[in-house]
Length: 399
Image 1 (cartoon, one colour):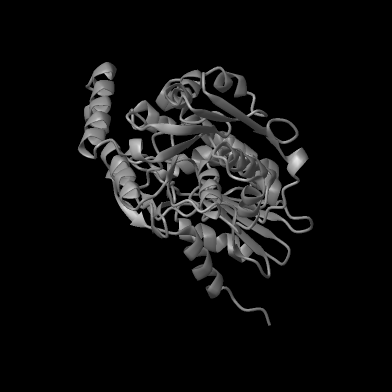
Image 2: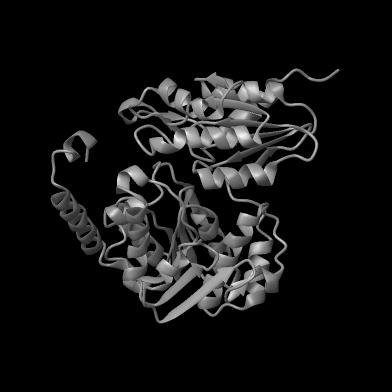
């Protein structure tokens, strides 16, 4: 439904419209979630990695598994890119995916569940076996009308999931999610919780402390399904990477990483994890896209200024906003010496040209997304990783 039409419809009618679509999708596809165990992953950051790691655990344990994340649709051994620019698809597409998973004899489906999806009742009429909470920090604040409403939207997944709840005990909002009734509850954390790294001492190939939390969440979910701890450990420790999440694209003579981070909390963690010991850090960033969460644009700029020696602010997904205005707002937070480059390819090219041996280039905001989205929803084919490889090949070769 077009945004221009939405603003003329009372919110309660719009809510009923989305609820009706959810019911219609479930009826049309014969309520497929009744014949498969569905596990939902929600939170501000880490959903995609947790979903991917959990799918690996389930498959390692011998279960036929489907997984729907912001990067892919996967049913057993077949997978395709999620090119929708939508983490949690619409009701009919979501129910169709579950129907296809059932038809493929999958025993489990793992879904990312977003606050926007919950707001539009996309989680309705899906029977969730378990709900996983990763973490919570300010995001989609303008769309929800405040942080508390955002938190409550996430909580609705736990209200409708009565079997198993899996909660990050280290997150300051954990008590809110622990209050919802469930037959079984599992907690995880760094040094406390039913599943914790103090006991496990995980040795991941994935880098960053936040990926320890992601792995702990997936392991807790695996244990909740009766899977042996050693199978869970083996599965998460062998995963080499998740597309567009802290993905190392170039290793020598300098490192180039591509990551999806577009929230302040996620950006801090990425920068602190990737900070080089000797060289400088060169950062390419934009914002979270046009028309949303404008409050965080200067915040992202300030975080870059605190961590990066070279900062390039560029275009991301402007939608119907003036992309240069977004760039200016991010750059205002970063202060002096910031490069403002509208063309994202040119921004990446500039970052690579500035890099020397032992430096690290960090490109955030898009990850593995296949599109840049401009005015009126026009999608331009795009891939940060391929752009990096292409521009790297063009660099002058050292004598």
